[in-house]
Image 1 (spheres, rainbow, N blue to C red):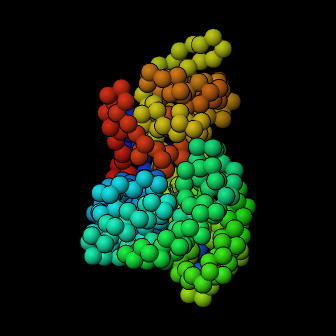
Image 2: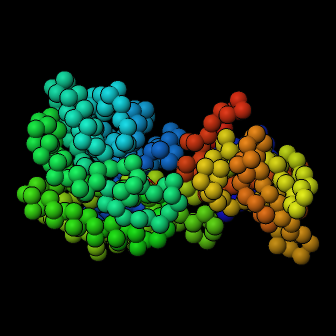
Image 3: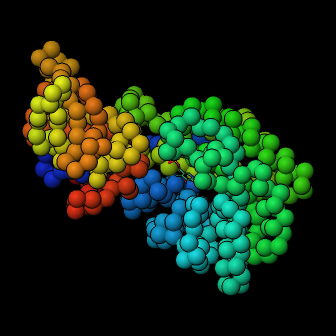
Length: 390
Ligand SMILES: *Cc1c(COP(=O)(O)O)cnc(C)c1O
């Protein structure tokens, strides 16, 4: 993926840092736009995946909306010139302050996750003499077959309204005069690579829609959420997702009523492959059964491996002779400097013989990477660079 001259550029930048390939992001967005436009689908970018200004600006320039999960994300989206009418707001724990921010900006829709939340939004909207547009986030009880920490669409998860609560919700909604029900919302999890899970979702959405039709409730918008996964193992071979098949699946299986609009909320699928965490090897240390390559980046810069055993492809960029007969491949546990045993990017990773000072790339780190960085151990805030700036 990296052009040969990139190492010379990286060599002059203090590590660790995030590197974003703007071309990869734009090509991803070109594809996404082309395929979603075929069906008139509306895509909101899940800003929590990566909320760097430059990334948000580029995404907004392609006409995507913003899917926000906090008041600050709403503020950020507005700052980055997203149209408030293209902003949706999800989350199980919206504070009064955050709800007021959303009301003040008159965002497109609150995706509501509980009855009590609806009552609070109703009260706050009433106090402002306004009406809030809402969608019901329904828990469709679909298993996304992904890591348990990033599955959200099962009844045992904290997210959404369960099907057996719907009767009660609909009865109560009639009394909440400052809410306007405009849609149904679903989001079953993240890093879903089995596209069949989305087909199951479509079928479940059709059943749930029939319930609303039989209760004579018109729904203008169906929001099917996001969660589509990327290939962390082969980032070069599968740099771009098959957006054509993804959107076609919804067109094939989702039964729409006249005039209904379909919304998506993609995060990872948009930004994961454009980002790489660049680090240097600080030390090589012999272990009992392994070698340790100790990097200057750790879980404070990229938390996914420590948080949910996530895999990131690790490459030694200083070894341009990789694959040639003279390059010996050894196994390394690639770890960070943080005082936690979970601060490990990969065990028994095959790398060419690696030395202090070598530049290491942790691939596919554009989503849920920089946004989750922390100051634990009083670390400096990680910096970021863009391919068109260096
Ligand atoms: C996180 C989130 C998304 C985006 O998930 P990805 O896996 O990044 O596509 C979409 N909708 C909601 C409600 C979310 O919380």
